[in-house]
Amino acid sequence: MKTCLIVDDSKVIRKVARHILETLDFTVAEAADGREALEQCRLSTPDVVLLDWNMPVMSGMEFLRALGTETLSHRPKVVFCTTENGMAHIRAAIEAGADEYVMKPFDRETLHSKLQIVGVA
Amino acid sequence: MNMAVPAADPGCARLLAGLLEQRTGQRIAPNRSWRLDTALKPLLAGLSIDDVAELARRLRAGRDEALADKVVDLLLNQETSFFRDAGVIESAVQAVAEPLAAGMPVHIWCAACATGQEALSLAMLFAERKAAENWPRMPEIVATDVSGAAIARARQGAYSQFEIQRGLPVRRMMQWFSPNADGLWAASRPLLNAVTYRRHNLVAEPPPAGRFDLILCRNVLFYLVPRLRGQVLERLAGALKPGGLLLLGAGETVIGLSDELRPSRRARGFYEASGHAPSAPGGAAEVASGAQSS
Ligand SMILES: C[S@@+](CC[C@H](N)C(=O)[O-])C[C@H]1O[C@@H](n2cnc3c(N)ncnc32)[C@H](O)[C@@H]1O
Ligand SMILES: [Mg+2]
Image (tube, rainbow over all chains, first blue to last red; front, top):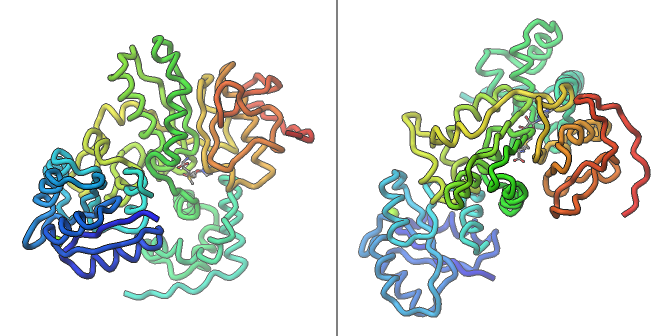
């Protein structure tokens, strides 16, 4: 089974995403900000990180940059999942190394499709 | 507003199903028949028609072509996505790569293209390979659908956030689409110009003019009344150039429907004309298919 770490400061979003991911046969972990996510990645690196942009403590972009400096067992795929739906944000995320981008609101089909594109579903 | 729409009585349901079948050869999928009211609700509300019975009365009067068109559009399954069965789209491009690289003209017909995602997926891949491998030219892509509404949308090439995220990798979205004033993602001019859209009914009209190197006809045969499937396949066979290839949807086959097509020997997953196809375009005589063994 593939593993996904959901990183979002909204409990509701984490719950919705978890539900969808579990129906897609993922084992799911959660983090409420970038710092927590980084700690979890050190302990156990997931196959894919579903990453919010705006979060307290450490934002999605800060997490993505920090992830690049970590020595992990493997580099997880990173899929941004955010309400920042403008081209400038999307471009910045991809240039910073994100693999895919989900614009909120999302549904099961969108998530499934993007996870297939990065090769984890 | 919570406007309850009374359920269609069997007579109305039969009328609507009959209209759809007569216009398109499609049967209302069994899992949709009980949703007739839901499917038609927006139309009824928009036209201030009280219920399906009133709609049926207007359709029976038979003077309102535009209304009949709208009803048929709503009853058609137009589900599609970018890069649906991505590997298959790649192999379709690969199947005609050689002549394109050599600068030969290539004609492609994307039949039952719905709102255009399939044709644009092909166009993106062709444009990318043309740039990367210095191909002298793009193929000509004609994309058709029976639904005027679908073709109108395809011509606009603007997709909702939901549609644009289905199947389309974000890098391609960034390269080929940009947000427009309506909050939709609009295909760039060069991409749109790579496809010519036309309204066309597979069961009632001869194929578009010309012969094709590649025909895609995916996820439409399945919904056709069985007796029409063989006829449509024979027309498609007749529209192929010698050596041309036909691609059907995943799980769709010619086996037992037409002996004018057979699995291609050179391209896996494609079909080619077996050589008995009638040469007059549109001369789709119904041929009883012989018993097939494999
Ligand atoms: C499920 S969609 C498939 C779209 C696309 N080929 C794909 O595979 O994603 C089926 C399409 O077939 C069209 N269609 C149905 N009957 C047709 C007919 N008789 N002639 C042409 N198109 C038809 C519908 O309008 C709809 O857009
Ligand atoms: Mg947030």
